[in-house]
Image 1 (tube, rainbow, N blue to C red):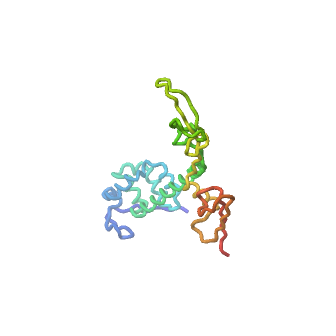
Image 2: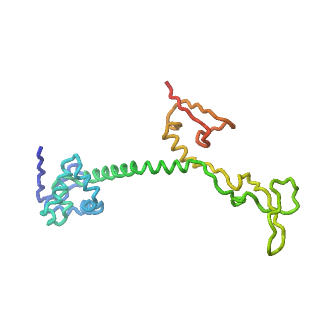
Image 3: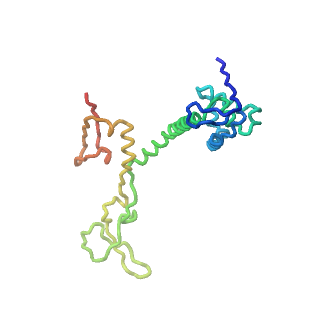
Length: 236
């Protein structure tokens, strides 16, 4: 079906919704400075994504706007963007609503494209890892004074200081590390988000949660440790 847009007359015409009162149209469209400034600010003439959205819009008026913008005659007007928008009978409020939807759709597409990488990073953050002990700096022992009881764990003569000739005694790191390494739990927020996405826990829904612990003491959180399995049972 062929649709022909009616070229607006050179007169002051009232917007359909009546919100802006009388605004210039036709060859005097450039006098609508508010509309002109808005179209310049959003970069409608230079943004390829917005142009693609115009071409794929189900509203024939936005397709006509893009068509009019490409015409050599439009370039001769004082403000081609406003002239073409008004020629396609698109008022400012309609253009603002369309731009908002176009940007929302674009943002959603970017978020969907980034989701796999974000989930992969969250999976890495959620895992526990071994880090160097801050008490012994990863050596597994700390300096100590001579004369400690012989049964002190790891108490031994390490070496003799070359400059002073003094004996340097050490003992096992009292921080409980394993040869200078400590197990650091993964990020709790990342664990919670991943478990929610996989359906193992459900904080938003209403249901009965059965928590089963595999060894150790009872724990209230299904996220704080990975040895807790949470099963959601939806009410019948």
